[in-house]
Length: 88
Image 1 (tube, rainbow, N blue to C red):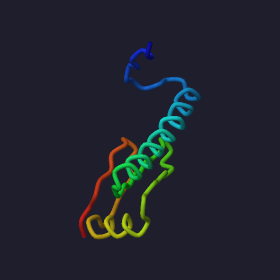
Image 2: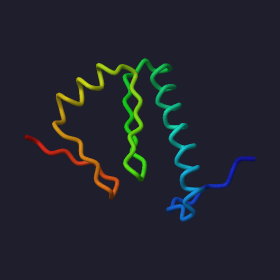
Image 3: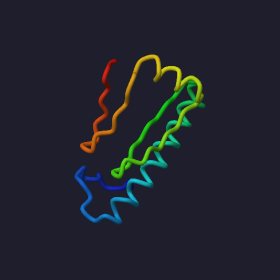
């Protein structure tokens, strides 16, 4: 018997929200690593916390930096949890 479906809405309790963020971030990083190993894929993952702290994972640092710098000039964190790019 599996777990019940989680209703997707903001977690109001700050402590529970932080714990959930930490666990899900760890799960995302694990899945990124797994897909990289299993499928021989280049993977890059960027996650920002609600305070703007950056968490990142990549299979090859040079590959990610090269790809990002060639296609994006700026990445700006906006508090509404969107990422915008602005050309030169």
